[in-house]
Amino acid sequence: MRCPFCAHEDSQVKDSRPTDDGAAIRRRRQCEACGARFTTFERIQLREMWVVKSEGRREPFERDKLARSIGIACRKRPIDPQRMEKLISGIQRRLETSGDNEVPAQRIGEMVMEGLKGLDSVAYIRFASVYKDFGEAKDFEDFASTVKEVGGE
Image (tube, rainbow, N blue to C red; front, side, top):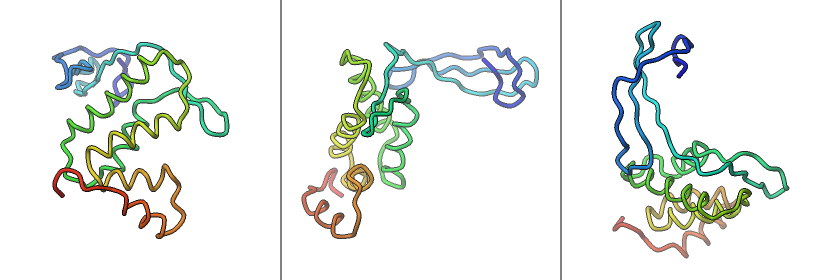
């Protein structure tokens, strides 16, 4: 594994353990050249998946991109990071086990919406505002009026 600090090719694994949800292995590493310590995560990838955008363009599925978009929607909300990680892992697992190598971006968006709806109503509305491309305040108002509170907020 390449060191993120000095780009040396070799590092030594100091500690390995499963993540809380058991979907990955967390490894603490130390660079053999500069001595810096860093963490890596190893996940199972069942198959190569492609996301098909609305205009027909294809791009590789990126778990990090999914995590970033969910993270943005959940920013500054009282949501346990483990619940967000469980949502991300669940969506990825559902996509990988669907048997499809190409997944419409719309299906991923719907899965995120479904997951956020049960997690946090504000995060749900935030994500929907981008996913559904709200153009004006009235769009927010109309959508928000259909949302029921989640988690006793």
